[in-house]
Length: 198
Image 1 (cartoon, rainbow, N blue to C red):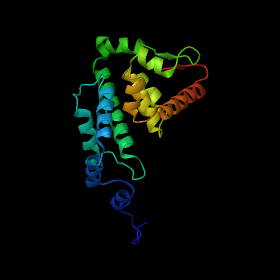
Image 2 (cartoon, rainbow, N blue to C red):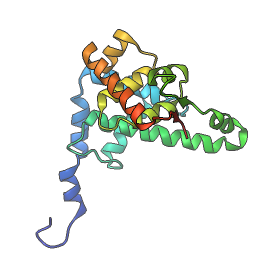
Image 3 (cartoon, helix red, strand yellow):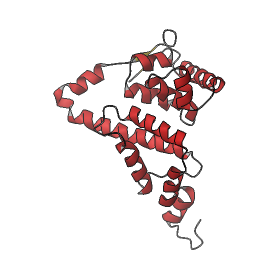
Image 4 (spheres, rainbow, N blue to C red):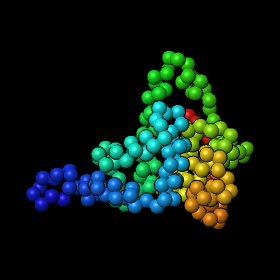
C-alpha cells in the first residue's frame, strides 16, 4: 500500500517478484544437477521449433531478466524457468504452424490425435509410443505445482526408464514410485473415460 495514496506499480512488483539481479543470482545458484535437468527439459521443448540448443533457455532467462515475465518470490525458480521455456516454445510452435498452414504440414499434424485410454495404456506408454510435444505439454499441464511429477513426464517423453529416469528426476526409487502413482491417479481421475488431445 502506498503512504501517499497513489500506488506505484514498480515497488509493489519488486516486493512480490524477483528483480533482474536476483534472477541472475538464482540461475547462478542452481546446482549442476539442476543445470543438467534444464538442458534435458530444453531438449524436449525444442521439438518442432526453429530454436537451436541453448537458445530456449537463454531466451527464458532474458525474458525474466528484462521483466517480460515475472518470477514470484514464493515460486521455485526452477519451476518458473521450466514454465517460461514451455510457454516460449509453445508460441514458437504455434507460429510455425501458422506459417505452414497452407503447405499441408499443419494439416498432417492436426490429424494426429493421440488418445489416452485409462484402461488400455499408462501415461508413460503414451509418451513413449507417441512422442509428441503437444501430448507431453497436455499431460505435463495436469501437474502444475508438482515438480517431481512434471520431471517424470518429461523423462518419459525422452524415453528414460529405471535408473536413467531416477537420475533425471533426482529421486530414489520410492519417491519415483510415489510420483508415478500420483500421475496415474490424477490422469485416471481427470479422464475417467480416457484422454484425447483436443
